[in-house]
Length: 472
View 1 (cartoon, rainbow, N blue to C red):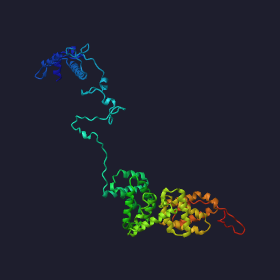
View 2 (spheres, rainbow, N blue to C red):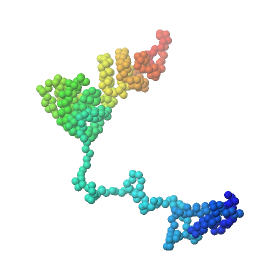
View 3 (cartoon, rainbow, N blue to C red):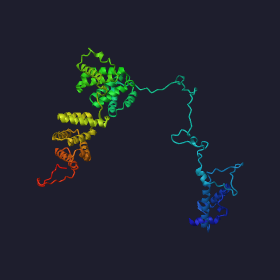
View 4 (tube, one colour):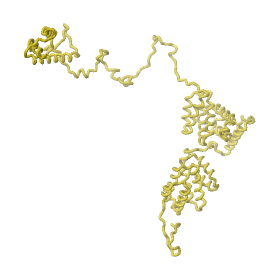
């Protein structure tokens, strides 16, 4: 094969023009092709001597020609008046910078005018440049879908009326959540979004029915809720019809809540005091009630209203429950509870009163006050009764481990100040802590944390060198 190439190159020597980097014209290209065809016979090259070097130069010239033509193909030659492409002085196209091609933002598809999208304010979710105000779209009268009757229509969101089957399922979570946060405005907003229709009279009945099985603080919240909803979501006629239903269904409510008649009577008295029920509401039932439970409820309401005229505060009928009470009031009530227990000695009554306070997070104050009362007492009766009460509350799980520990730790921290008024406070505290550990409602670690003051030893001729433990 090398012999054939050498023979062909010897027969076709390269000219100087063939080695130039300039473009070949159409005639020159045709000439080369013709030469190649003439020097090839039956697919075999005519051999020529000394042609290896010339063959390499020929191949290099062809590669340079292909490279130059492919580089200039996308530059777009400009044409002269006679239609020939304009070239430089040497017949070549004036070179252009490759950077201009990379930075050119014009469309290569040949569409558009090359302007930026959306006037330079393009991007996802962008409607146009900032500050641009869109006018209302005018109605096209010639639109085939144009309807003259819909030109001045006002569109509103219509909420379908609440069905009777879904009423209780929808309102029960709202009332139960209200018992946790106590915000009447939130309940009013949620009820305003519902289309209660004729079912609005069932709201007070549902709230009172849930409050009968709840705590005293929840009943107080229910009375406040009815007062705030009346005039905004409910009317006075809705409240009256709701209490009428409650009186009729008292025989069924008594099965679940035995004290329902008295509680409903208190709700009625509170509603009359808050002026969401008329004062003549009770007069309308005189001589017309056959149910024993309804009569008991109305009698209870009448007695409370009569006592209210004599100075009873009906607005505080249910009391203020839980954390809504001031701390000073809670401390005062716990002190009164302990004093009443020391007089009566009834553990169950003390437990009930502590439950009704509804402050399990504040029971450490009860433990603290009980121990301080022991330190300030003079006899052993208070010592034994308080120890017995704390053990009873521990066994019944009213006071938790954390609350018991915090109560003892608070006494440990304040023992130095207590000792100023009670000189024997350290000695009494050590005895009480030892007895508490023996009773099993404090741990060994808490017992070891009990502070002790260094005892002085008084020695005289008659005591034989013994320690006087009670002398400080």
